[in-house]
Structures are given as C-alpha cells and as structure tokens.
Image (cartoon, rainbow, N blue to C red; front, side, top):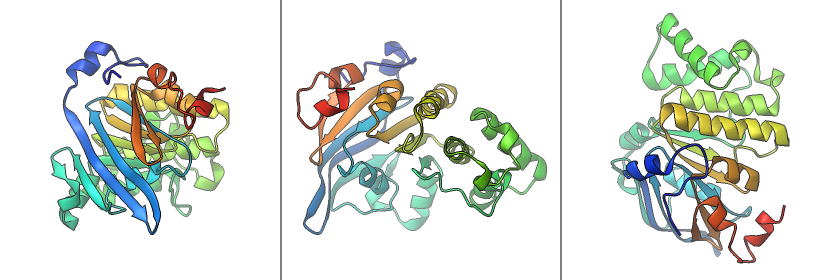
Length: 261
C-alpha cells in the first residue's frame, strides 16, 4: 500500500516533499510475563504527517507510545526519534528528547488543585525556566487560543467538561512547541460532537505548527478524520499500512468490525 497518500487537508505533494523520517521503529517487541503485547512492530513517521495507529483495545497501542517516551522499556527492537537512539539515552538525554515530544494523555492529566492558567504555566516554569510574568501570560493565552478556550484561563479543572479538559491537556502539551505530538486515545469517553471538535483540533495543530503526530485510537471516526496514513496493529504486529480508504478494504476478521458502522 502507498505510504504517502493523504486523506485530510494536507496535499499529496506536501507529504511527498516531507520525506524526512522523524520517527523510525523497527522490530519492536514487548511482553509482560507470558503475554506478548508487541510481537514485531515497524513504522516510520514523516515530517508534518498525522499517522494513526489503529487497533482494538489491548493490542499494545498505548504500550507502543510509552516505549517511545521511555515510560516502558521494550524487550528488543529499536526506536529512533529525531536524532536520538531512544533505547541508548541516559536520563539527561531522555529529558532533552521529551521536551521535543508532546504526549497528550488519555485522561488529560491536569492538576486538580491548579487553575487552567497555573496548569499551563507549570511546564514553562519547570522545563524552560521561564519566570517573566508577561512572557508566561503571552504563551498561556496563545496556547488557549489555539484550542479555543481562552475564556477558561482562570477556571479549575473541576469546572471543565470532558472535552474542555482534553483541549486544555493538548494546550499544555503545545505550549512547549514540540516537534512531535503523541495522542493517546484523544476521543475516548467523549460524545460524537466533542469528538469531531478534537479531531479537527488535531488537524489544525498539524497545519499550524507542522508537527508530526502519532494518534493512537480504536475510534474509526477519529482515524478517518485525522489520518494522512494508517498503520493497523493486529495480534501485536504492524500488519497493514496505507491510507484510511486502503485499510478499510481489508478482509482481515480482526479489522472488518471497525468498518461496519
């Protein structure tokens, strides 16, 4: 299957020209005891591309991205992100990489005791050492404008809906201007209308910041709306790869139910 065909607003020419590989994973394996989660996963992520990793719950999608950011150590294989050999990094180098890779957690991971403003200021202060009040304000406002929630700046997380929390979580990730975004089940637990808004935001982020993104999902609507390319995980293998329309033509019994909607 072709690897450079696009299903969203980015053009075929733009994807073809963005030939630089920013993530390369080869023969990745991970087991937990006798449970083999990742058996042989291979993927390339190109610059300014939205790559969807599609699969059923329990197929190792989240384990895959946790391996990428050093939260889980794989049993074997290789992970190269930007110019880093991830499995060979020391703690200092891993922290340098993490500043360039934004991780949008499934549960938003906001601090309940902090306002939205404080949640967004926190990574700026901790990771970049920014203390200037005007600079903090400007960056927070820009990030909130990006996700359409500038009016929520002084709210507490408990005052936010599930969709708003997702947006604020993405804003807190974007505020560090990462080169790569990792989205873990971005539409999980959301109603259909809010899910569409999150999908549109993911595409907007790619278009505005030229980020390269990996979107982990079992939500077929999210895959259809956000993917430039799809890799399907089946039985711990990166078994199918192509555009959304190409993947939907598979007759694999593990994937067919996704498209019967």
